[in-house]
Image (cartoon, rainbow, N blue to C red; front, side, top):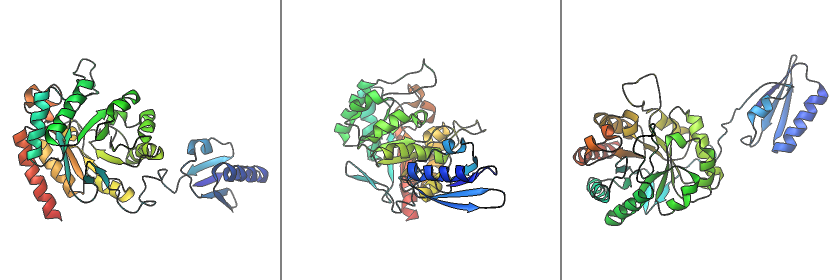
Length: 334
């Protein structure tokens, strides 16, 4: 961290400020005195320092980080890729996983039928929403606890590990038997929820916020990891841009960027990124080519009558076709 002091800063103020930084944050402070200003260089773990607090001091002219504020999610401190094991499956080891299933769990017949179908097509995880955050308060909000029970029935029938979204901290106990807990885009910066999930050892699928920068996304992962849970999987699901033809804009560049900055696995959601079923295949192919560790794709047995997100859902037959192409591409890239 580099701190530039104001020209009118006295020697006594400078020394007192440097001592406070050393004592409060256990960092080494190097001082460079110029003709017009004095610069303090902080060496050590500066991730705990509140940059806004430093900037608010009367004697400080400017402050900037020269090291990313996330440490546990940073590849500099963890050069090897993190591999997360879930029910005997490894995410981040170079293999490709597909998490497939409906946006919302609607009935036992629906979720079990889709689970059996996507499994035959190569899906390794079953996704499905029991608790659904919706923009409209009048839209279907999910079957809630009943939906979780139906997901477990589908897991028992197929053996597929389940991925489903959590909405609030009070539900954590309810999700004890869920294989991967998903944090949705709207909750990416629900820091109290992230802190509580950090106290668990459950794998967490952390979706990128609708307008979140890559650093903000990684800082949310840092919240979970700072609590002691290193089992974080990042999910790029598209961000808001000026373009309104698609539901969101898939940031394909985020995949190699994350791979460079962080050691965490990256999953891509082409369904939410596009909002259109016919775009799922090309976006999924692009994500795999860019180095994604997996995909999360919405599949519904009857999309026109789906209770949520039918327009972006593939039929089981369409999914089978897409999955074959995806695995063929992955093989070709080896």
